[in-house]
Image (cartoon, rainbow, N blue to C red; front, side, top):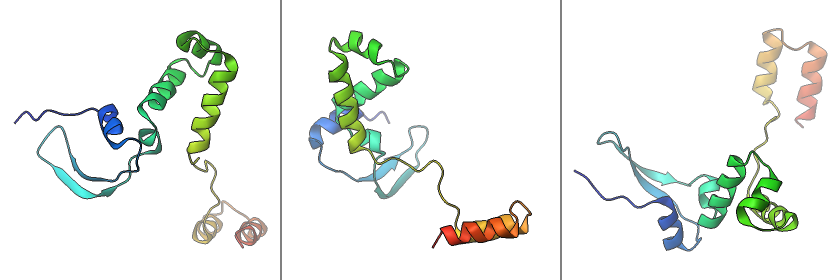
Length: 125
């Protein structure tokens, strides 16, 4: 069965930027459907225009100079838009603190000395 699909930009336009929850997902290759409450990733929650802007920025390897040429606007305009988009995103901690259990496991494996483990556990307080 060939069901017409709508692209993400159309969904973004239809919802007019309102928060949404995806409740049903069907895998394109097969008849598997998953139901639940799924929040789309942060980048998918941006407006269609901002999604295009972020994709262009990545394609330009982060070159603001190239973005100026692509969009025909000035450096401050590109920088302001990047700052606005960045402010709307929650950043993931790329170096999270280990849990108490992880510290103890590292101590057991000999990856931490007793004094290092104590310091790590005290930092968790």
